[in-house]
Amino acid sequence: MNIRLTWRRAALALGGVLAAGFLFAWSGLFHVGATGGHWAVTNWFLHWVMRNSVRTAALTVEAPPDLDDRALVARAAGHYATGCAPCHGAPGEKQNPVIAQSLPAPPDFSHALDPWSPQELFVIVQQGVRYSGMPAWIEPMRRDEIWSVVAFLQRMPAMSSQDYQALSVGDGRPPGAGLHALSAPAPEAVADCARCHGRDGVGRDGDAFPIIAGQSEAYLLETLRAFAGGTRRSGMMQPAAARATDEDLQGLAAHYAAQPRVAAPAPSVQDAVLEEGGLIAREGIPLAQVPACLSCHGAAALARNPAWPRLDGQHADYLEGQLAAWRDGARGGGTQREVMATVAERLTPGQARAVAAWFASQPVR
Ligand code: HEC
Ligand code: HEC
Ligand code: HEC
Image 1: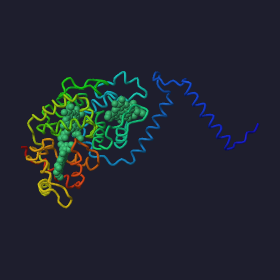
Image 2 (image 1 turned 90 degrees about the horizontal axis):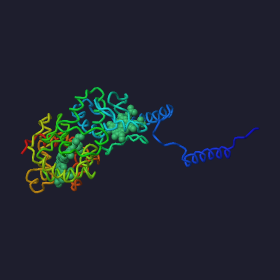
Image 3 (image 1 turned 60 degrees about the horizontal axis):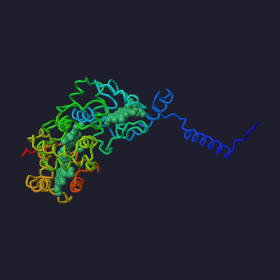
Image 4 (image 1 turned 180 degrees about the vertical axis):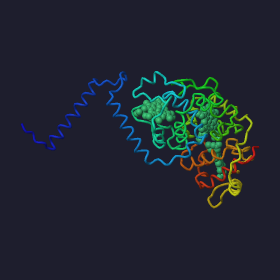
């Protein structure tokens, strides 16, 4: 028998296959349970699709910053312990056996990590992996945060469990193993914050964390509530603030405001840069309609409105990073964030760098 292939017949055959597939799905005979795992060929196929997708998306990712920077590695370590280790394990911390039963199971990173390029890791961490439980970064616009996770991931397989503990726990308390760590508030609220900021709010590992010691209490509380509510955007601070109750946030703001302010080491920039920064701080940039920073961030202004943050002695890199995040539309903040967004958008990167260095070099009051 000879059946001639026509468009009509091809369409009918395709429709038949689709209808059969639909009927099979409707019948409930397809087993969605995670017991038994995938066939080897399904595993291979899914991973192949994922690799291709990641490889293609990575083509448009910029060159990474210096991934050997110790501060960059340290910044992500504490977040890894609560945001990633519950699924992936960590040096000296085996993967939770419950998690190992999910399909696909998250790869166990306690010993090794597949050789992805930095740009590929960036894509995986920023965008997550569909149909697998691998979450996307909470704030995909915060590329600086994602690069710090990549820096950490590249170092982690070579870390001893002691190195990992030192980096992720600081002088706080270990977050507890397994899924619990994703949401559990620490028994004593400050123990969680201290992992990254220290109990004294001075931070650690160079400029890995902003100095919060001696910051205005009103600003601390407002900014912590902004993190918890998601209007201030950070993939690292949002989960930390959301784990705490509002009562805890009030106590934490009071605690850190009461710590003695310690100045960051003076930034190494040329005098001309500091002079330019000082001029912007005192007089603004009239032509670009930038007001004097000290009209809001000076001592007298802070006495008038304590919800404005002090910037004296803060790490230059942190200040510059916040100004850049505003320029990218990725910072957000408390109820007065738009005021500062307008100012930050008018600064060129060079001006932002100069004024950040000037504030960082100011002796603390
Ligand atoms: C809820 C569990 C879960 C959490 C939390 C999680 N992941 Fe994943 N992750 C997965 C799963 C599942 C996969 C496997 C995806 C696949 O192969 O399709 C994965 C894959 C990955 C991969 C690719 C590994 C490889 O070689 O295939 C990287 C890298 C990764 N995750 C990093 C992270 C980082 C960094 C964090 C924290 C910011 C994190 N993950 C948080 C579940 C999780
Ligand atoms: C996993 C590490 C980590 C933990 C835990 C953590 N923080 Fe942070 N914190 C950071 C990082 C990183 C930043 C900088 C965020 C940014 O760049 O937007 C930050 C920023 C802040 C800021 C803003 C500083 C400013 O000048 O605006 C405050 C306030 C703060 N943290 C307080 C806390 C408190 C209180 C806790 C405990 C509930 C806490 N943090 C827990 C890493 C952490
Ligand atoms: C009209 C008042 C005002 C002026 C002028 C102003 N700021 Fe701000 N600034 C704010 C407010 C309000 C915030 C807090 C925003 C938030 O997070 O809710 C802030 C926050 C900041 C932050 C973030 C601090 C932190 O700890 O995260 C930086 C950096 C900053 N300002 C730099 C500057 C610079 C540089 C100038 C001058 C070019 C300037 N500001 C001028 C009101 C002002």
